[in-house]
Length: 422
Ligand code: UD1
Image 1 (tube, rainbow, N blue to C red):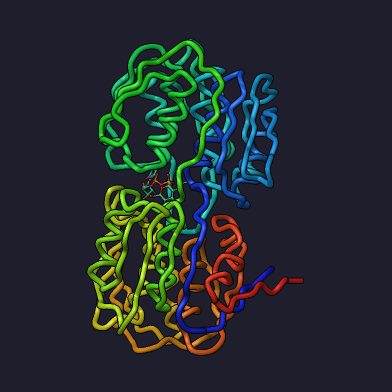
Image 2: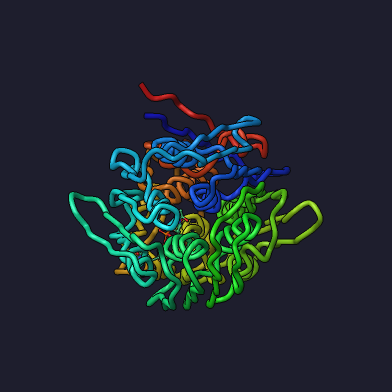
């Protein structure tokens, strides 16, 4: 298994390119299953999760080609051979459940293994199943698989999510696009990735209104066509790299960055004393003098502070002046990075869904273990600002969600290298 060696090395300066969003791409790819005609995605990120989704789609008989060094994904689902998503692929990635809605809508049946994914809490899929039931599907859980049937096709209905779920909203949007009649989704997710999915579905011929608001209305159509769609900027990669100069000092421009993708996060950076300015090239982030100030953070669905940036924000707060409280409201058990940061000299107390971080002047390098995708990058950020060497082990998590981390950070002046495992 590979590890990453980071040596704390002073301020970072320069430009960094932000890739297309992993989480958008992972829902845009299954949208190909809705149509016989080709769907092509541009600005795709090059990540292991995208390769896993490629394998899953291919196992269903979808033709998937990776073009332009992986930045373009061309898909065709004109002759699918299977409606069963096998455990061996699904267990690697929770987003695999997103094939359920499209398969059920187009074929009237689907079998999908119950997913695995990052170890950040129980993460059930009950809402995905309930919203399909509201559209007339019959669900049966057997042998670790969801067996879904809608022999006469899915029918529109009204469904109010008891709490916001990004994935269940995406599954519902895709399924409802081919259902008979009108579907109204209430308390729907409003994330930029949802808006991006709707833009793509609309290009394919879907009739959808209200994306980006809590109520989305879908008028089902008989068939969807092909499309070419550019994947939205990855706001989580953006926020992660915005934190690099915030932690280390310096000035970095994140090319293609936009404040509207991360308004709540930018407000917190401002309160911490970090300057963020939007310009025609993207977002320029600078920390010129002194320590950052401690700020409290509560994670919430969009437009709130994203849970996927909580670990990285904690790395920043470790060396802030004062005490901050980070409250995790989306996933239980999402503080596994806290004990690792403590190994680097951070002072963190975790009580249930709260982490209290008492800022210290400087962290010290140490061997640490990446426990999930976002935790792994938070340890790299912490290592960049620490004294001495930090070795982050188990970085396969990192490769699921960040392309070329070492190259991108090295280009800003960071001392970071990958150590190939045996
Ligand atoms: C997506 C993102 C993930 C992000 C999360 C929250 C992808 C591929 N992943 O995950 O990076 O952290 O949104 O912004 O886009 N829940 C249920 N039952 C369900 C579905 C969800 O109880 O059927 C719970 C989850 O355990 C969690 C909460 O609802 O506590 C929100 O999860 P959800 O928004 O569905 O996250 P994902 O779509 O899995």
